[in-house]
Image (cartoon, rainbow, N blue to C red; front, side, top):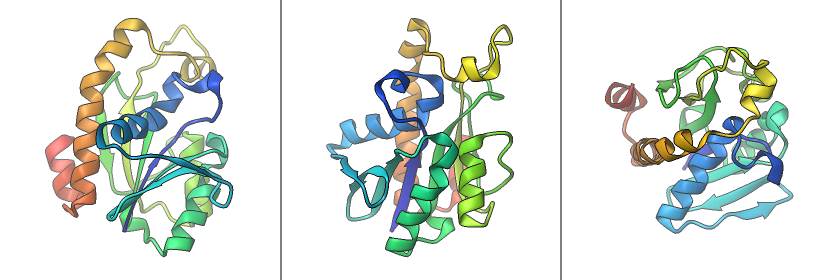
Length: 182
């Protein structure tokens, strides 16, 4: 069983913010594949299941995402090698995708939380570049919405993200997935 996690913040005011690109990716994937999410108090998440994978959008806020992820991993006996976390990266150019099988948090509070709760840095990551507006404070920048032109450009990104998710679920090695999309 694979676990695909999209990081973001719950609540209407965060729906279309750059920091929620993980949530957006999973929502788009669910719409395309007719997957329905349910709210889960037990897992502090919105959760959806197929025969091959579990999809979650933690509702703990970004800074405590690891708690929800750990609960799901423990309950379903999922190993870190079967985890894919999708999140925003301020330091990558807009729409640039970077896949990595491990690494530090790189200043991302959601990843810091996951590392702390799982006790390992070895889990698969799909980082999506949101770019950086040097005229804005970092917190304001990541919590701002995409512009109209950026929103239109996201459509192609969502197709690539869906293909990465499909390859991961199908059991392709993460090394092969990285070679194909990085």
